Length: 200
Image (cartoon, rainbow, N blue to C red; front, side):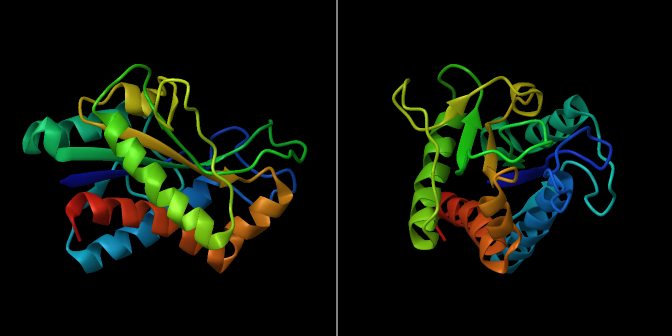
């Protein structure tokens, strides 16, 4: 498999920060993206990013999906998985909330992405148990992923998932995310799932 890593949002994205402005989602997503990339390099697993993550700005959602589509046309639709990395929020960034937990999203309906989402959820379950963290799931359609036609995963022709790595407008969870343990946990979930796909 070939992996397209998408680090959600940019410096210019409205909101997407904690109420005390100590956490910026675009920045954190890039931190986790870099850590995942380092591990994939060590494992010899092929990947690319949807845009240069060393810059604080990014491509439009459609443009990022098009990057994945270009790769999928070159390598085969079934040989590519887009993983969009995000951190979650329950409000508008102006006040602290109580929601917490890790979740994975696919588009609406049954698609090939669902089997990958289930695999990511299973690996997240192990990591969350290890670090005593919470999972969020929607089992109304028989699996654990949430469904929404987010542009970056809806407009791709290859399987695509979006992970929401806990809540940065929950003060306790945000502090944990910013810790070394939190960063390690978020990285582990993605890398462990990819390793499982690769049989490594």
